[in-house]
Length: 256
Image (cartoon, rainbow, N blue to C red; front, top):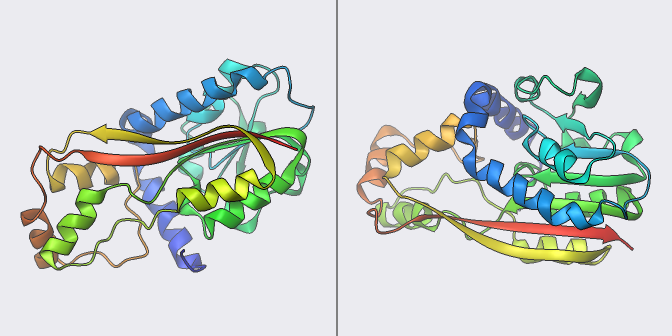
């Protein structure tokens, strides 16, 4: 678990700001997961209570749009700490967008929410399990939490290459899926909870790291590798027979 680090939050925002203009064209996995999460929530459309709805760490609005298309009803407030990412979506208008650092908790207006959703955002926050508890507490009875987050076990070939090269692994430390499931299950009736495995072709270390940077997801609490260490990592990167794997926890639950 990462310790609170305001400087890290600043680095995350700066990296996503740099990749904002090309985020949607490069975030194919994030787009697919958002669509899947929204489809899983469709059976709840008629069961949700009145109240605010929000996409936490909305970025360019991939998840918010998918949910609105599947569930109908009120639009979702888009919250994100990166103004440049929010600006990539002009259709909802500024009234539905809020520049907000989720490490500070939720805005007062989201207490008693009908629906809180988040996809590929929780891993960037301090103490992810505690954030899930806070989000569950902000729901009103029968309110829903929709969550997708990459978890520990992702990018094994990156960790293995760093170990073989004898250099630090600069991958972002990801949350433990079981801990998040436990937090959610203590407050919600879980309708769906599954750790999904997504594989992508491994074209080598440089293309992979470039792809991560293209969407602004290169921030890490670890220091950047020096050129010599980076060359060692590239030299020890496994071949194309080893896929790049994401472990993504997908959960849908309602407040008891």
